[in-house]
Amino acid sequence: MSETTKSLNFIEQIVEEDLVNGYTKDELRFRFPPEPNGYLHIGHASSICLNFGLGLRYNAPVNLRFDDTNPAKEEQEFVDAIKKDVAWLGYKWDTERYASDYFQQLYDWAVELIKKGKAYVDDQSSEEMALQKGTPTQPGTNSPNRDRSIEENLQLFEKMKNGDFEEGTHVLRAKIDMGSSNMLMRDPIMYRILHKAHHRTNTDWCIYPMYDWTHGESDYIEQVSHSFCTLEFAMHRELYNWFLDQVYDENKIRPKQREFARRNLSHTVVSKRKLAQLVEKGVVKSWDDPRMPTISGLRRRGYTPEAIRNFTDAIGIAKRDNLIDVSLLEFQVRDHLNKVAPRVMGVLDPLKVVITNYPEGEVEWLDAENNPEDESAGSRKVPFSREFYIEKEDFREEANKKFFRLKLGKEVRLKNAYIIKAESCTKDTDGNIIEVQCTYDPKSKSGSGTEESLRKVKGTLHWVSIKHAVQAEVRLYDRLFTDESPDTHKDKDFMEFVNPDSLKIITAYVEPHLKEAKIGDRVQFQRMGYFCVDPDTTAGKLVFNRTVGLRDSWAKIAQK
RNA sequence: UGGCCCAUGGUGUAAUGGUAACACUCCGGUUUUUGGUACCGUCAUUCAAGGUUCGAGUCCUUGUGGGCCAACCA
Image (cartoon, rainbow, N blue to C red; front, top):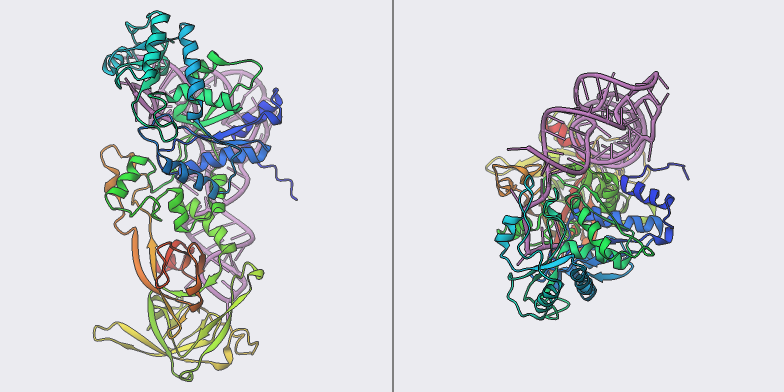
């Protein structure tokens, strides 16, 4: 064990300081509080890993709390999807909570605020209230209803709750300070009327608490010690604390809100509205399309939970604006898959090769290592015969010495098989090469230990015996947007940057044993990249998604 | 004519007043039956200007640049 004391991020430092200044370890409690109004995406992963990571680090409970205060947007379907994604990422929440569990408590507290003269019912239109609210540079003015009597407020609020009013006609407001430089403190709305069924409380309520009134109090009810959220909530902290002051009991834990910068990933968008647009416009097929930055999309793409966790770990957490290059994410999948993905051979762009001196009809089952990074992965048998496919790009009639592949008159190693030499090739009437004729060195078989087999030949190709090949649909993905930050241009819509070539579907030929592959299986097609079996796969049709290509230094050389 | 937050290489993060670190990317090299992996090497005096200090990326001031705040959304 090396003594590499990893430096703490500023969030961990806050917790450490609190541990020094009075908190005991068993008082620590965290929460991940999604609104069940959509699918989780890569941006949420940071928050999930931050909160659950803290839980793991301090052996503290982490609640999964659904912030379900707006029945107009929230659905059970999203609750289920979120639970699935968090669990898939590998985290276990202590208890599953819902802000809606606290509706009664919140209501009771609101009544007390009214009694203390700290909240009032306003029956102006939202336009009137907006006008009175002022602007960031101009103070607001008091509502004419601000000094309504406590008795009247109580009656009105009761009526709101009982459903006596139409939507939009009355709200309950906290009486704070219309002159505050913080707009959120200008008598914020605590409750609004919504005659809508809630996915959990159904029609029990027709008044619903607003985020600010709900969030801190929910943290307090759950005795969450640290409530971490993104920077755009920084201004809410003052209000969070004000609401907490109204109900706080000194013998209890007082939750502390702190903010961090949301992580922005390059070449994608993450807002629900924009992702929905991609689905609706048919740019992608679904919310879990492998090109989507959703957790479900990444999962389908073949990303592993480990890769995503390592990614969030590597990018850290801070307060400054950021745009994280996708290469950091891609590195993590490659890094993990390199260790765990079995190697197989698959030809994506086939060119037929015939070994003229190999006996017709003969088949040899050759040994192939499953993973050079992991001896315990063992080996498998791969069929070799007279005719097989190689990649079109692996043959040239002539090429310079930098081309370590098959060319006329030169030798190359077939992975796990023989050394072959290209003798001639045939072309169709358009001049396209359609077949290469080779000879092989029978004594050069891989692993045979003969002098010939030990010969060093520059270049090793993957191949698939034609007679044994299994056809598979392969979906090759590229970044969804050509611009690194598609939705930050003032003069251009993000849809203008959609990459028209983000998906390419081809037919590939793969090793026969892949017929047994199951949905979700991840493999490396040697020299080609990492692939996983898509859920569209059926008994008669194999479908692979390319998760990510291998690093390709040849492509860089070839470009020059 | 406001308030709050932020500023370290191409990217992300660290350095807790003691002489800029780690990862990715890029470029170059070694090993290799994957042009993969692994390994080695190159790439910044920290937005600017002042100030405090023996010493400043770190503290102060003033600029500059960026983000956030006026939903009965979260």
